[in-house]
Length: 146
Image 1 (cartoon, rainbow, N blue to C red):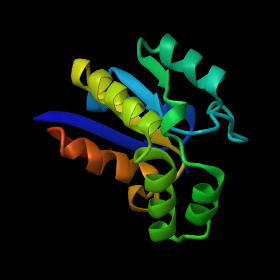
Image 2 (cartoon, rainbow, N blue to C red):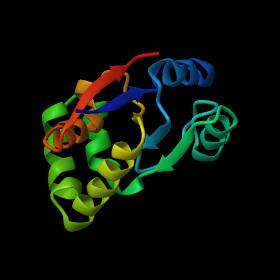
Image 3 (cartoon, helix red, strand yellow):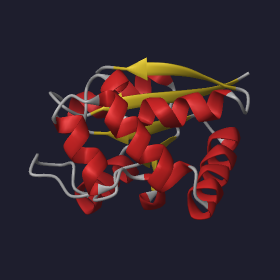
């Protein structure tokens, strides 16, 4: 079995994120946010990539697997079922989404990879849906909380 990690940076600072990734043996962080900007210091794409590279960790922004705006709004409203439906219909069940998922699986098969999004609880986040799809391809999931 191949291992996939997930983490949400809600409630974390950059150092706690790095410690959690290092302790788990993660080699690459796969940022699965549609918009890799954050008001939280250190979590926008460039700053995040720089801190990871300084810690000898890889970074990949997999924008194609991010949640569309309507899905993000559903997640913020704590409507996981609606978020899941929107995410599957508008992203995962499309040709582009399928190709992006194939690429993510290939990345995760090469080296220990962790999916990153904002939400601390993976049950209310699209990274849970991604992990379920990847489970059918032989991955087991470990959720990190920092």
